[in-house]
Length: 100
Image (cartoon, rainbow, N blue to C red; front, side, top):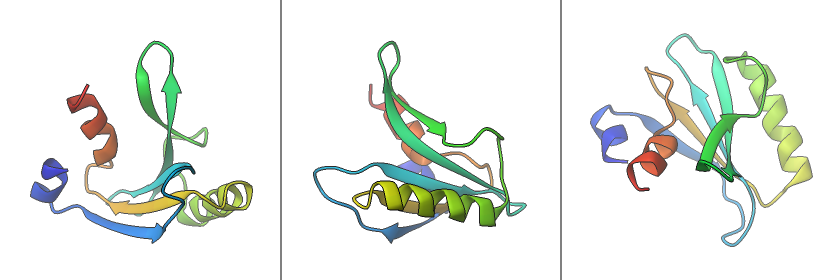
Protein backbone atom coordinates (compact mmCIF):
# COMPACT_ATOMS: atom_id res chain seq x y z
CA UNK A 1 0.00 0.00 0.00
CA UNK A 2 2.99 2.30 0.44
CA UNK A 3 3.51 2.30 -3.33
CA UNK A 4 -0.11 3.35 -3.83
CA UNK A 5 0.37 6.19 -1.34
CA UNK A 6 3.53 7.36 -3.14
CA UNK A 7 1.65 7.48 -6.45
CA UNK A 8 -1.25 9.32 -4.78
CA UNK A 9 -3.76 6.70 -5.80
CA UNK A 10 -7.27 7.55 -4.65
CA UNK A 11 -9.13 4.69 -2.96
CA UNK A 12 -12.70 4.80 -1.70
CA UNK A 13 -14.55 2.04 0.15
CA UNK A 14 -17.88 2.00 -1.69
CA UNK A 15 -19.41 -0.91 0.20
CA UNK A 16 -18.38 -2.47 3.48
CA UNK A 17 -18.94 -6.20 3.41
CA UNK A 18 -18.91 -8.85 6.07
CA UNK A 19 -15.65 -9.08 8.06
CA UNK A 20 -15.56 -12.89 7.83
CA UNK A 21 -16.85 -13.59 4.34
CA UNK A 22 -17.72 -11.95 1.08
CA UNK A 23 -15.69 -11.28 -2.02
CA UNK A 24 -13.55 -8.19 -2.47
CA UNK A 25 -14.26 -6.34 -5.70
CA UNK A 26 -11.85 -3.68 -6.92
CA UNK A 27 -13.11 -1.12 -9.43
CA UNK A 28 -10.08 0.33 -11.19
CA UNK A 29 -10.49 3.53 -13.17
CA UNK A 30 -7.61 4.52 -15.44
CA UNK A 31 -6.74 7.99 -16.70
CA UNK A 32 -9.08 7.82 -19.73
CA UNK A 33 -12.13 6.93 -17.60
CA UNK A 34 -12.32 3.28 -18.65
CA UNK A 35 -12.74 0.74 -15.87
CA UNK A 36 -11.70 -2.75 -14.88
CA UNK A 37 -13.41 -4.78 -12.14
CA UNK A 38 -11.22 -7.36 -10.44
CA UNK A 39 -11.88 -10.01 -7.82
CA UNK A 40 -9.41 -12.17 -5.91
CA UNK A 41 -9.54 -15.92 -6.26
CA UNK A 42 -7.30 -18.83 -5.37
CA UNK A 43 -5.30 -20.58 -8.07
CA UNK A 44 -3.85 -23.94 -6.93
CA UNK A 45 -0.54 -23.21 -8.68
CA UNK A 46 -0.18 -19.46 -8.13
CA UNK A 47 -2.04 -18.87 -4.86
CA UNK A 48 -4.01 -15.61 -4.58
CA UNK A 49 -4.70 -14.13 -8.01
CA UNK A 50 -6.55 -10.95 -8.93
CA UNK A 51 -8.38 -11.12 -12.26
CA UNK A 52 -11.01 -9.18 -14.16
CA UNK A 53 -14.58 -10.44 -13.83
CA UNK A 54 -15.23 -9.49 -17.48
CA UNK A 55 -13.73 -10.47 -20.83
CA UNK A 56 -12.44 -7.14 -22.16
CA UNK A 57 -9.36 -5.57 -20.60
CA UNK A 58 -11.18 -2.27 -19.96
CA UNK A 59 -14.89 -1.49 -19.99
CA UNK A 60 -17.09 1.60 -19.81
CA UNK A 61 -18.06 2.76 -16.35
CA UNK A 62 -21.78 1.99 -16.71
CA UNK A 63 -20.92 -1.62 -17.58
CA UNK A 64 -18.58 -1.83 -14.56
CA UNK A 65 -21.31 -0.46 -12.31
CA UNK A 66 -23.78 -3.01 -13.67
CA UNK A 67 -21.34 -5.88 -13.05
CA UNK A 68 -20.74 -4.78 -9.46
CA UNK A 69 -24.47 -4.41 -8.82
CA UNK A 70 -25.04 -7.92 -10.19
CA UNK A 71 -22.30 -9.31 -7.95
CA UNK A 72 -23.81 -7.51 -4.93
CA UNK A 73 -27.18 -9.15 -5.64
CA UNK A 74 -25.44 -12.53 -5.65
CA UNK A 75 -23.19 -11.81 -2.62
CA UNK A 76 -24.38 -8.95 -0.42
CA UNK A 77 -21.40 -9.59 1.89
CA UNK A 78 -18.97 -8.35 -0.78
CA UNK A 79 -16.62 -5.43 -0.25
CA UNK A 80 -16.25 -2.88 -3.06
CA UNK A 81 -13.21 -0.62 -3.35
CA UNK A 82 -13.00 2.03 -6.07
CA UNK A 83 -9.49 3.05 -7.13
CA UNK A 84 -8.40 5.83 -9.46
CA UNK A 85 -4.97 5.14 -10.86
CA UNK A 86 -3.05 6.63 -13.75
CA UNK A 87 -1.34 3.29 -14.43
CA UNK A 88 -4.50 1.22 -14.11
CA UNK A 89 -2.90 -1.23 -11.72
CA UNK A 90 -4.43 -2.90 -8.70
CA UNK A 91 -2.35 -2.06 -5.60
CA UNK A 92 -3.84 -5.05 -3.76
CA UNK A 93 -2.43 -7.39 -6.42
CA UNK A 94 0.99 -5.79 -6.01
CA UNK A 95 0.72 -6.20 -2.24
CA UNK A 96 -0.10 -9.92 -2.65
CA UNK A 97 2.92 -10.40 -4.96
CA UNK A 98 5.24 -8.57 -2.58
CA UNK A 99 4.14 -10.52 0.50
CA UNK A 100 4.39 -14.12 -0.67
